[in-house]
Image 1 (tube, rainbow, N blue to C red):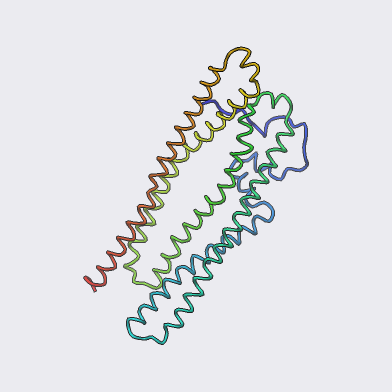
Image 2: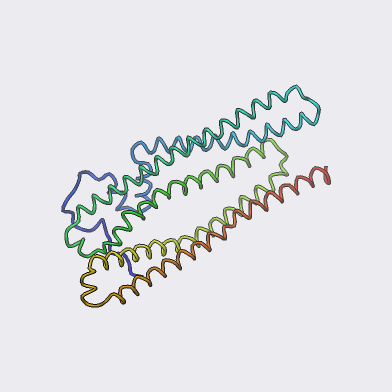
Length: 296
């Protein structure tokens, strides 16, 4: 696999659309560049609202189960006078939680699309600023793949990737805090084990998925580059009777992309946290039954 020759930082610029607010971050590191785009302009305010609403909705969700448990206790004790208040409170909590989640989803999509727009604009501006010799050295298909598909991946990086990660951690640790505050400390065993195993399995999953995803994106760029170059020089290909050779080259890149895609699917199919959730529910229920009926 050949390394990409694209370098948007160290090539002479012949055209500049004005001040580039991302230049320093881009020259520093890819992580700084992504963070700069995420928190650029009004994005920081929108992201603050997203994080705030996510935390509030996780708290409301935990409070709902606590109120529901108290309502069941009063029902079992025959205290029916408080049930109406519990019903109204649970209704309000269940209305507030999805409303906050909808606001969070909407704002994170706005930020993700703004990030994609700014990234694509930055990429186009840098391409316009490059010399003719720079463009002659690049593969058109690789450039097209980066401008379209790779930039689109930055949208998905924020929504749903980073947003779901943050939401998963809030819905994981906030209920543990409520369990410590409102329930017997023995019940913290199952959630704590799940949190530890979840973090370990997630780290293992990301470590395995990262290199395969990088291969997938590289092969996608090579596949597009081969096709674009063949179509651009189709007259030369036909004149030199190289159709079969070009077809074999393209099929080879397609197979490499297919194999990387299959490898990615195999890793994603072995997403252990889903199994851990089922095991945690089973262990937690068994532990609660033991504490209630066997070891009162």
